[in-house]
Image 1 (cartoon, rainbow, N blue to C red):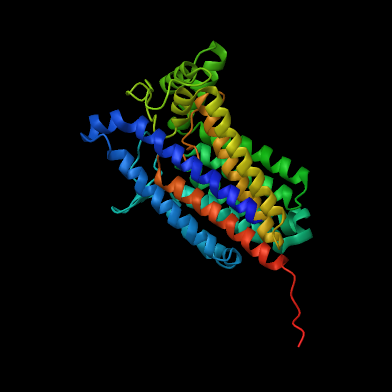
Image 2 (cartoon, helix red, strand yellow):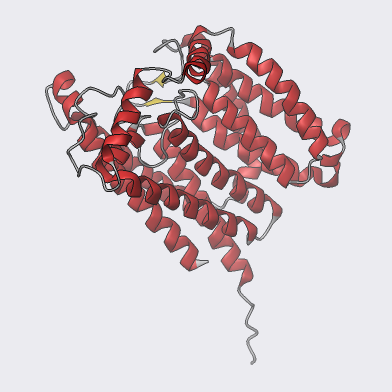
Length: 370
């Protein structure tokens, strides 16, 4: 377990360091134009990295069993925060996703994801074989999934809502839910979700643009077009650190959701493959830790956390390469953004604690002979 934990920590630190380099090179021009200080966004990112590291350490110390005990009241709190976000938070680009407390600005949807996974893991463990029974087990988990995913969708935040649903149902399947129950529910949810998405101009436009781009063999928007130019200009080995042209205000959000393009431009195809390989390695390590957990709760929570990290990474890469509709999903540990990087660090901290607790329980008891 120690080797796995050390490998996981090393990968996360490598991704964070790479992210800091990319954020600095991608945000310099924007910071200078907007804030008259080339280091403005970079300094902000470093502060968030430090907060993320401290959060990861704290969650590595807290016994993960505690989340099972307090997940329900925590879930009620995040549901209230999601409602407040919808009702009171100012809209940005057609969406209301952030609560601004002056000192800190955060996305409740990111917190809701993690807390929901904590609660679902506990429910699945408690239900046991009843999870195979739709009426007496399975349907109770659906209430929490669709309440949280629905409130996130209304913001509107289609991408996070989809990750919540997909990860939650994968967790239900891993936990023993019947495939026909999952398939039928997902089918109904897809129809309802598609109808809901078309109600919001923000999400509707992105979907229409994406479908049109497929039909016309074009790109959905200026961001994807510039992102693909950046990826293409990187070639095999990249143009070099700090030599990105897309960072010179050609690519909007180059330091945020579209930082994968700057990665490809500066480090080339090999650099992007290496980073995606690191994410896959992180996922494999997380799954091994989850499998070796001392109880079912640790196994389920560890799986959900690991799956959430890798699906977020590959969705981000899919968006930047034009394979998926444009979303607001960040590249874990790399993109500029406080809530995301802090919550992903907390997730890794939980995995570390699961590994630590498993190692302690696996140690044979030594009998002292008097």
